[in-house]
Length: 388
Image 1 (spheres, rainbow, N blue to C red):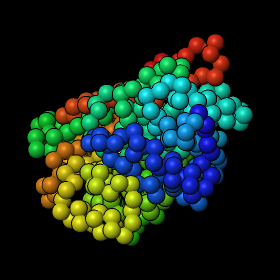
Image 2: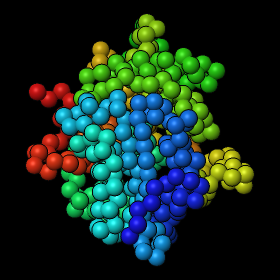
Image 3: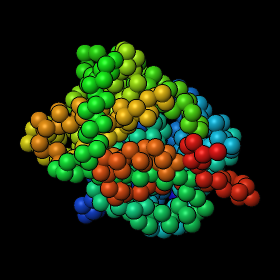
């Protein structure tokens, strides 16, 4: 077997061919857009390169047949917030062969070790965790946009190498044809009408204001989480620019109290339902197909990417009020029948309780795995937020 670094047009082409071999005839798989994957590895497109670096490889057999691929990342803003300096691996795809998987993991481990890392998490993203993050362990069905899909044997490939489960990510589904619990709506309506509270959905003409508000809410809401680092505004600007064709401004909400941003809610249409028909390419013909399918209302699902509330308002019912406003707009979009609420870490009991309170049904589980280079060190799970 031979491991080859991705450095030019030909090797980039091989990198994108691997998942097509793995998921051939798998109706659950939605091929990510190659351009979006390339953006992750392009310094001019990914703000994570300001404080980090990345590399990727493909693996072939002795006859040149593709066997797998992997990427490795270091984000120096976050590496040293862990007990062991920790890098990451992601975009992993591999045939069902432990020797092949081990060779990919070995290359990643050695590259990270040479740069001072003592552990690696995977599969993760070189960027924020709401995209390309986690190993699917349960719920092998259609995934919402940005949520990874893989075959069941991937879990064994990671575990046999020595990865442990650092935390679990749960995804919930809400059937929009069923009413929310009555008690939830009573709280929602009461809070939504309280003096001093205002609600506003996103608009592109005020994008910079919303970027500022997003970063303020995010930094306040996640400040007390382990490994917190302030958000880079360029990462949000990059997301808005990249995702502009799929963003529905009426699915992105901000809450304010006396003019101060206190909560955010970001939901997007599930374009995976369209991407299944585009084969990863966004050429001229597929652009026309995308616009056509978008107008035909093929998409009938949405995915909640992020919901954040600043600590002072986390028990105020503000999340219910956001859903109350959102629901009014969704009544004008009857094609949407289902919402995927993802992902909720098992270390965050508050968000788990919130998703359950709106009638969410747990249907998928992803793992964030960790591998400690020093095998004598005891493995520790991610701590529960708020636990002593």
